Image (cartoon, rainbow, N blue to C red; front, side, top):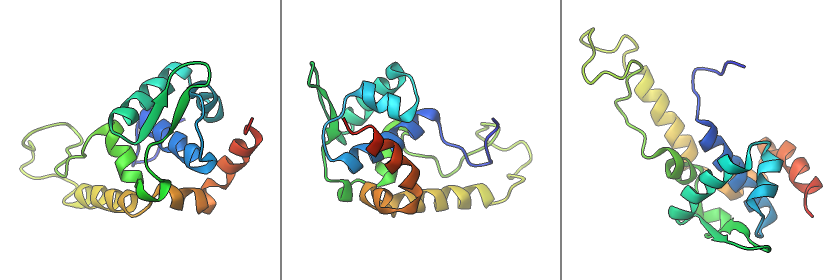
Length: 150
């Protein structure tokens, strides 16, 4: 399925959804269980959660009772911090054709791309994992997460 104009990577999506589930449950969950809940491969989820661990957002424990859990309260983690842990800091002078200097002299989109990026960052920065869990946006995930609580 083709996406919309604004897209995020699968890794960032896994991170945001997985962190939301961790915030909802408020306990350690295995990466295997999280990957099943998000419907992605365990290997991809493990790589994503390694990055979140390195960023200090997640604590990871190995072994039979291991898994991942939030390292910081959900109310203190913004969606932007999760996004940045996976994607790095977004560039404000983003070019669709990856050119240092536009061959047209200036971007054919004017400042629109910059404004879209700024709005996206503003949105992610203004919402925490706790906000996400409380929102209607997370209702479907709440159903998935609660049916998989064991």
